[in-house]
Image (cartoon, rainbow, N blue to C red; front, side, top):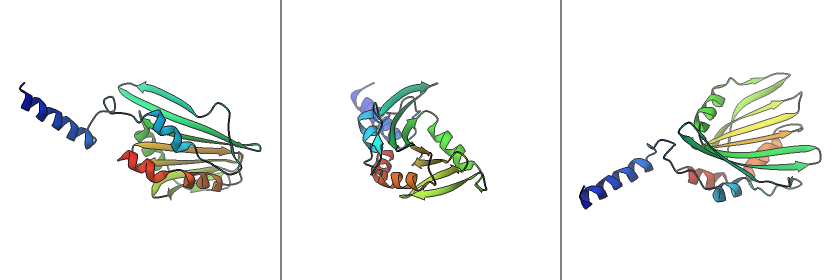
Length: 172
């Protein structure tokens, strides 16, 4: 192939990649140095657990994935913040949003929007456990869980302290 043909091929690959038509196995995952600060939130009264953040990387079939996790503690409560990319994150997020909403004596699950990001929140009244899952542009999944808590306000406050706009820009 001549030089001009190679340049054209490279340009085509770059264009296709920028439009998102690249299999996850070939897509570049975000570096952990970038992911960790996204969940490293200064949260009044909560202390980061020793040994965190933690990073996990792996492969699901031909799809790579990365996950960063921080754990915060306050009194007897624990809050876990996770941001994940790659693997089957998109499928998992779509499945969660497809679940029916409910509100009864056991708990609730409903769709929410925080900082322009769609998600789902749930709360188990018996276990006093809340979960909030956000889908950032079908690229990043954010999961916040806390227990024991009286309601999900602590999760929403944490999410509002996260750099959601920055995460959204990374997803583009």
